[in-house]
Image (cartoon, rainbow, N blue to C red):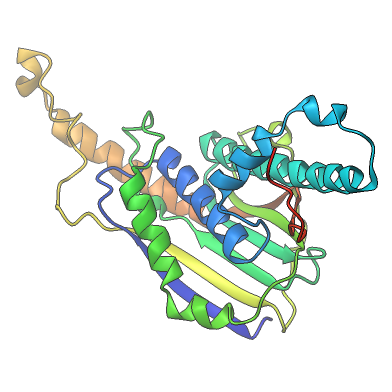
Length: 281
């Protein structure tokens, strides 16, 4: 068991409705945050992606000098890192869209999954997810930046990050709520882990516990409160809805205890930019 265990509470504020789509974007934001602050990419992901995609095929027309050869090789590695990050981000989105519930995710930084240097586990707040607003997939930029800023100023992380991490691999593992009636995860390119990876004692083990805080105190019943038919008041729908809600909560609690770990086949290989100019066209 890793000794460097840190538990960090991450409160999601100013987000009225919490959906799986919003959580997927938040997890991707945390991934981008970790990649940059743990020195796996030289810029924040949006800037890194912009520079890499700006390169075009015209560089093939350059003369084959040794200097140009070095630039091409480094740009090839940079593009590969960008593509793997993009694929991992899409994998996370698909996992949250799937019928299986994502209970937690883990990013492992290291040469392999058996001896990682750092581990970041993100725990998902299932009880706070709205089941009636599944079409909301975009997290407002303001709350996203506020959440990441809290991580940046977190004392526990600041202590762990006192040492620089060299360019290494980043692996993704997911803990999914299982159901025998649902299909397996071949479409997501996830592979079941019979034994959960045990972290070495030297691994920095961080657990990020997400929680939804609605300071406005507004209940997520805006859709339910719409009176579509005049006869709706004559129907005893409140009791039916309450019974259905209770059954759903019992079902969710039962499924919480049945979960399995899966590993993605996508590996992000960290890119450390060379000292010479690589980014100008």
